[in-house]
Length: 274
Length: 271
Image 1 (tube, rainbow over the protein chains, first blue to last red):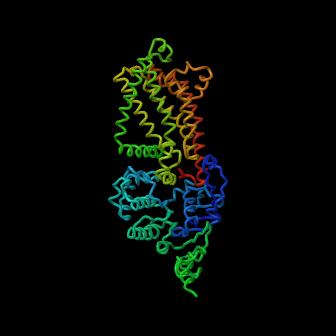
Image 2: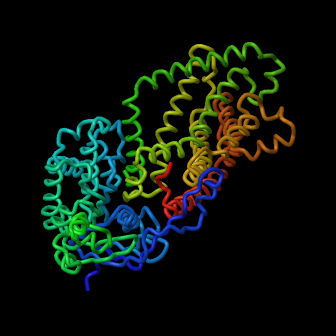
Image 3: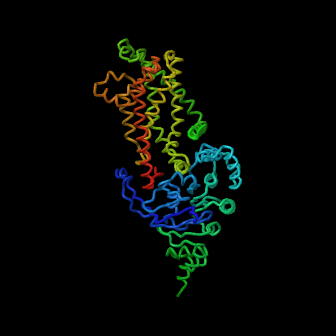
């Protein structure tokens, strides 16, 4: 049987409470008590796109950061391409492209192209190959001219596109994207989703795990969706199956029903009832 | 060129490219060095005497002694500062996480980030000495440049261990580093920057023997002012390399442990 691209089993992550004042000196040694992930298990097959959906604080970013080797889980394991994220982080990073969802993360005095060349070479790409890929990605992401400007002069949306280009630059086998289109305008977001789905996932065979609050994006991109709430997976299936299981017409409604939150329409109809 | 050399060069290229976008500070630093050299020249003229010169281990003028001490003390400051400064800047700019998810290893990232600051410090020191030689009669003619280079490399290696300890502290505790100020403070007294260690009381001379700065300044003055041959520098060079052999692996292990702690507590990017 083929090894899943991503395998997560009984994954738990607890964070310590934040200390202040002189107690901040104890921060690195405080016992973790705040639950971010509470026993998450799932697999993502090679070439599959899985979306993580849930409210703020549901554990989506924590999960992505553990897989990106930026956090160490409290219990359980996370594997990428068969490599353990804690025991073999360098092997994991060899397979990964990661976008943290922020518009930070670049050297502001360098141009976009110089930044991508720097990070591309840290991922062991050759100079000529980087130039070719940067030009191609710049076109796909709609920032061919912006690549030659210093990052400090770019809008947050364009910096985000640059960050997506960095994640894609070395053609990783597994792509982890945290809110990939958060700062993008509607047209740029649609074009990026099309590129991601057709070129990266379908043609390139890249495995995609992404977190998003844009449910239309989830329906367009994901083969399956995982609904997270307070560190637990409440449902994991195809969008239609999740909706059917929740007895909902839309993914938004399913999200409200599964997490036990009141949907605006439900609240309205309850108010209208005598 | 091997992969390691290519990666290290990449960090140097990055910092050089960033520095090129700030040209004015570079020019100002050159003139700052001129004022520093002039200050030591006139202080030396004021205090210099045959009795003082007799106390100097390499002989020569107090001006030469003090200028070398002051200029090379910069290395300690840079070594102690460069790792935690680049860590702090990476955290503030958000580049720390993107660096850590690349295929480049942490020791290479750390070492690479230190190259430009060390190179620019070397340039600054050269400018100091250049101004001193051009305008104030600093004696460069006797220098053994091969020995100077060897002392520089050994000094950088020994001091880098202290710098990486400092960065580990910053990673864990996020702010200020009392150890850094302690090392700089103690070294300014017992390191032999502006006066020879021999004038200190015996217990401070013992402290000086535990400090790599003492060996670095001593060897640098021997090589630069007295043109000492390698055979005369074996003891201070050996001491500096012994400091490096202990401090570098210990500091790398400490940094690795600190990084792991921040990955457990989720405070890697916290400032």
